[in-house]
Image 1 (cartoon, rainbow, N blue to C red):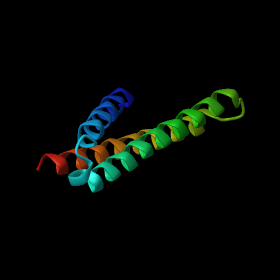
Image 2: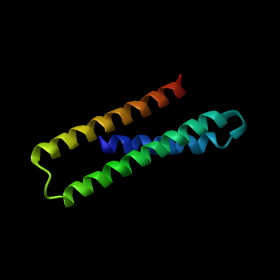
Image 3: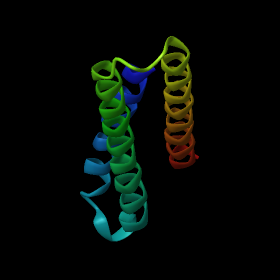
Image 4: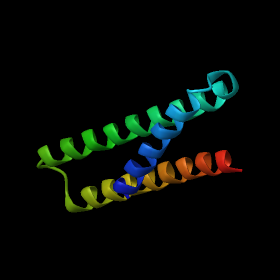
Length: 92
């Protein structure tokens, strides 16, 4: 899932660079994509930080770890869906 999101993130960056070549016509789209791109980075950074904290914490039980993994998976799925939606809107 993370690899797919990273690939989508690269697509976002490429699109932003292409659209920035004609900024007058594409300002709103560039802003939306840049905002989404930043959201992707922030979310992945947050999830990574939580995962690292969890590794350092010895007190978390197996159930807590599974719950956190499930929550992270749900966040990643939502993030991927959000990126898919935005990219599909650009294609139509």
